Length: 66
Image (cartoon, rainbow, N blue to C red; front, side, top):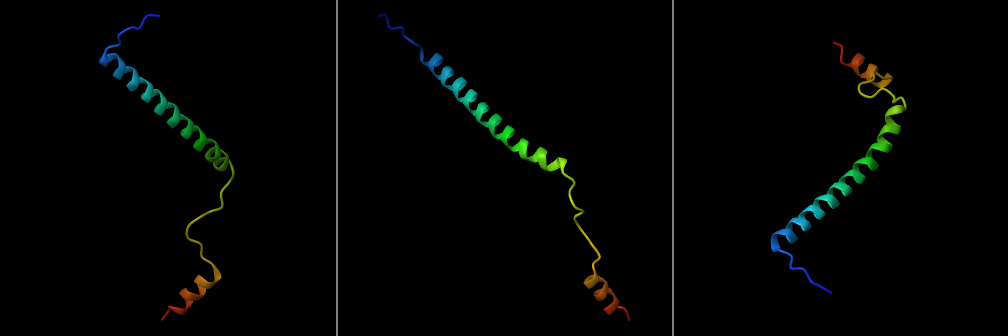
């Protein structure tokens, strides 16, 4: 059984590469998980949002006329 002497520089570069690979995998898994539900919602037609002139708003406008 032989034990190779590993330099400190090689050890830290291996740790950094492993950390980057782990972080990349975690980020990719998170992004893929977020895209799937969003894509399903985008395919469905959404009701119009924003300003709608309803009956009570028309009554308010009529009450503000001088």
